[in-house]
Amino acid sequence: MEKIKMQAPIVEMDGDEMTRILWQMIKDELLLPFIDLSTEYYDLGLPNRDRTDDQVTIDAAMAIKRHHVGVKCATITPNAKRMEEYHLKQMWKSPNGTIRAILDGTVFRTPILTPSVKPFVRTWTKPITIARHAFGDLYKATEFRVPGPGKAELTFTDETGTELFCKPIFNFDGPGVVQGMFNTDASITSFARSCFQYALDTRQDLWFAAKDTISKQYDGCFRDIFQEIYETEYKTRFDALSLSYLYTLIDDAVARVIRSEGGFVWACKNYDGDVMSDMVSTAFGSLAMMTSVLVSPDGNYEYEAAHGTITRHYYRWQQGEEVSSNPIATIYAWTGALRKRGALDENAELVHFADTLDRACLDTIEAGIMTGDLAAVCQRSAAPVSSKAFLTAIRGRLETALA
Image 1 (cartoon, rainbow, N blue to C red):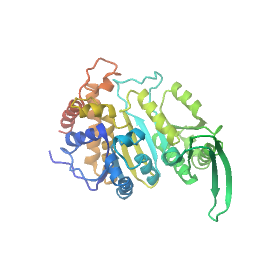
Image 2 (image 1 turned 60 degrees about the vertical axis):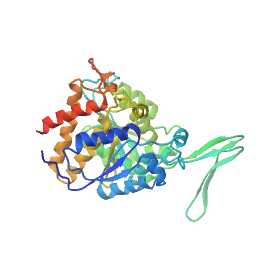
Image 3 (image 1 turned 180 degrees about the vertical axis):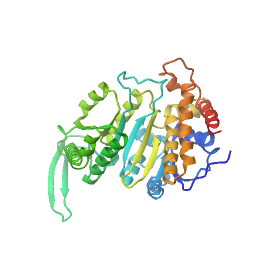
Image 4 (image 1 turned 45 degrees about the vertical axis):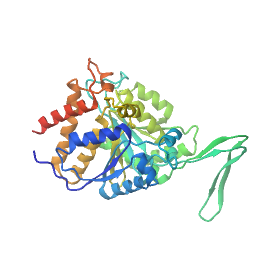
């Protein structure tokens, strides 16, 4: 079979631990035999981020701006334990947060549904898409470990040097910690427009939730910008399609989501989206069955798996054990990027390949061949297979379908 040609490259961002192993297995088994794969490669593994003082993450984000499509492997965001384990120079920030800030995009995460795996929430019959704001908040916060007694203040000085605001945060009588977060009207506006447009494009209602009763200025700013954009730019179009926009408090939204049937876009601030996407994906069956795409206002796309680096399996793999890690979300990151690259380049063969590989994955699961996480929640009895055996089974169905 002649390999499918690509007109332009995809920005490829390698990652860490077990997902890094799966990344190469997926390329070797499902991509390279069928595609003349063209990528611009960046190693975002934690050791290389440390070697380059995280410049490699910035370079990868700028490459996405040039080529418009990227695909990213899961990466470690180090804590104190990881800093010691990897002998790091410093506790580097989340590479996802860095990339999102540079691209100023919105992350949309949607569960991958298959009949054999039913949601744990019995009312859910349709997928729930999490739209996660991709700028500021906790992920670009400034933090300080307070050593002892003293005063923390929040101060704003305008560009002329005039102090416009200064308010005490807390008077410490001993050690503690303080944190400062930020956001901008421009980024919130971009986030809101992306969410409303995505809801229109997918013909789904949009929910947005924050905590403006407590955070009257910060979360209140999000609430007001969303409402203004909805009223002035989208309400008429929503009404024409019988779609609705709902703003509510984040705790009320969680209760509503659990009672719902699904089938809507749930817009969340950065941290809320990080947490809720894991909750939604797990409740739909598996954290490894969640698509994720970062979409920027100027037409750039970054695809990745919504889960982490599967550390527990990686340690076992290092000991020579055979593991049963689910590669589906990582495969879907690749197919999403290939599909978008094909669409932008009018490469129908590449789009068809991505669609066919997606179907091969789900057909393999429906045939009763699946990894341990899916076997544990499958509606029928299924013996789990290793990651390697699972990928081999997918390849067999892919070859048959392409032939």
